[in-house]
Amino acid sequence: MSGRSPFATTYVAVGVLAALGAYIYFVERERDPDAGEKLFAKLDAAAVQSVTIAPKDGETIRLEREGEEAWRLAEPIQVAADAASVTSLLDAVERLELDEALEGTAERLADFGLDAPRVALTLRGAEGAELLSLELGAKAPGDGLVYARASGRPEVVAIAPSIESDLEKQPFDFRVRDVLGVERDAIVRLEVSGPEGEYALQKQWEEDWSFTRPLATQAGRWSVDSLVGLVAGLKMESVAAEQADDLAAFGLDAPARSVEVGLDDGTEKILQIGSSPEEGKYHAREASSRLVAVIPGTLVEDLEKGMAELRAKRLLDVSTFEVEGVTAELAGGRRVWARSGEDAAAQKWSRSEPDAAEVETSKMEDALYDLTGLDVAGFVDAPEGDAAYGLAEPALRITLRRSEDAPEVEVVFGRTGDSAYARRTGDDAVLELDPAKVDELLGTLGQL
Image (cartoon, rainbow, N blue to C red; front, side, top):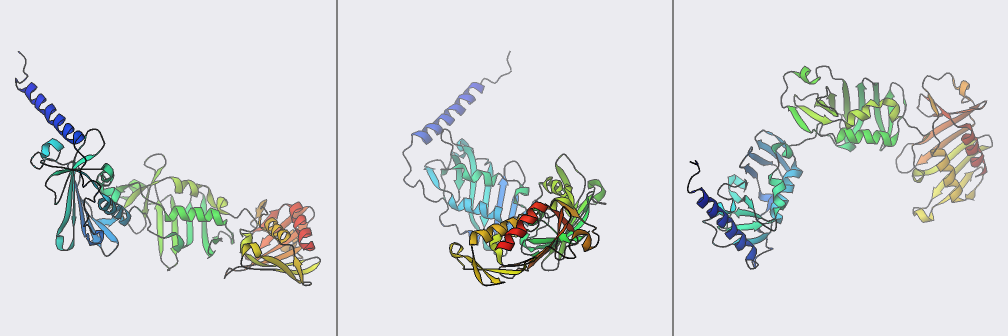
């Protein structure tokens, strides 16, 4: 004899009829005249002091406001919260619109999955006063809406599912994930150590960077800018340990790599990078913290390229539009040019030495382009005396005056036999250049 209950078929039938009834009611209803109105029209996000998200299956999340803009994750762990994530949630609640109010449903919550809601949201204001609550139930059949129960409304309502992604977030999604918590523009110094060697970079002016160790030499503006962006924007993908007692377990007792970050207020942060828990990911921490994060491998991949990747591969990392004036000392004597006019279309170049004359703007700009676009063919990092490179009696000394408060840029050029060299002011390295392009530049400047 079968062990199946004689009432099982009846239960199934009742369930099917209940679901069918809800479907018919929901689909065949006339459009609610209030559809499109804000579900929480009176909500003032600025008044919200506490947010609680309580999923049916999962950890309760509680967020507390700290000041006007800052938030803190108070449950299930106490850490700083990402204000943007909280703001996104509150914005989503403010935008919620009523699609349908299902009259006569207050006593039939189970039909809509609201006897045990999937997730409940509560917003509280000053002194813990409840501002609103929202519970999500089952998905409505047919049109993708969600059954919900909202404070101030006894009946079940139907809303768009846009709020679901915010309420399905995990505690980690609401926490601050910045590893160092520094602003990109505040970084003025980087000191890097790792298997590829050690080097230090110092910001000179806006985007201008130079190496200070192992030698003083110019760094590539855009390559350093990329590295600075990776350091400032580094975010953890997960937390390996909130308070690590054994740093050796993460390769952080003797980190394989470290990046010391100097800030414009005189403070510093030190990023330590340890072992790899899996391919393309690494353990890391800020040296003053016991929190061990798992970070993506992008930054490590950049650091693996070493100092050579960050060196200036062009003679000058200067945009032609920055240049206000040029002074050149070459075999034919001293020549001085200046740019005038604020409007780009009306800008002109003129020469003041050895005589006063107008200069064809396109030719001057072409010369500047050739100068700033000269590629470095090689680096001599431990040069002999200047005479070995023709720099004791240079073939050309050129100075660029830039806009605003930017420092002047000076370069000297030398020729020895079939070779051409250059040296930037304050740069320990001698640069090898294409002699044909240097000769072309000398000829162009001599005619302007």
